[in-house]
Image 1 (tube, rainbow, N blue to C red):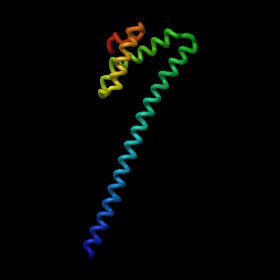
Image 2 (image 1 turned 135 degrees about the vertical axis):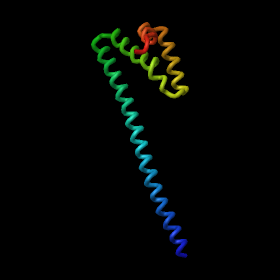
Image 3 (image 1 turned 90 degrees about the vertical axis):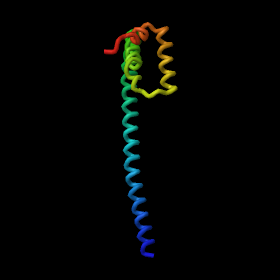
Image 4 (image 1 turned 180 degrees about the vertical axis):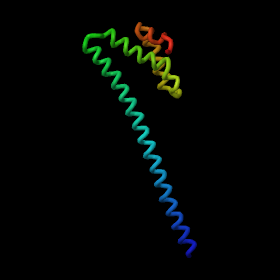
Length: 114
């Protein structure tokens, strides 16, 4: 009977310890994902507010050029590090199609990465 009680106690202690460790790692992972998502949204907001400022002051060509440079930078550089996905392929096709009607984007896509 003592052996059974020790086994149950050991199992319970192991279970509680395992749950605590698992909880610690899960919370850490969620926090890291939230930080990453927050950084992405912050970058998007920065680009958006700059473009809005340009548009509101009547600098349409400047806004188009700025946005085209941002898209071009993604297309030429950053997207190489993104894992393949249907969404990525769709975005790349959309960028290429849009460049046919946007001289600014076409120019930004053709520039060499610096």
